[in-house]
Image (cartoon, rainbow, N blue to C red; front, side, top):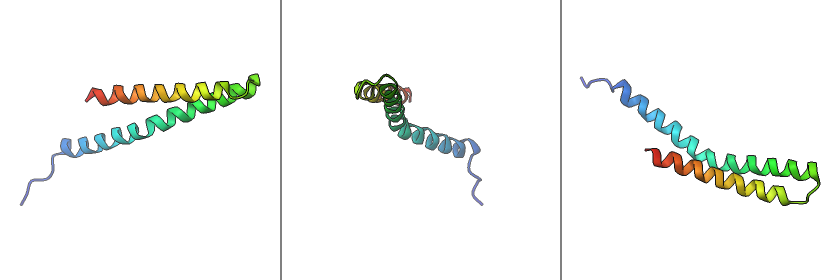
Length: 74
């Protein structure tokens, strides 16, 4: 009869899956948060689309930075 799978090996697969799915959501969430913050600032200060564009770009840069930082950890 084959040996049961090692608990540590099985658990590390789930940890890897969770980490990768978190990385997949990181960039879109950062962009959406930056866009929402910029949109709110534009409506609060009545500045057109200045803060929306700046917030979206800031969210994208922050998301890419965090994505690369996490990817280089492994």
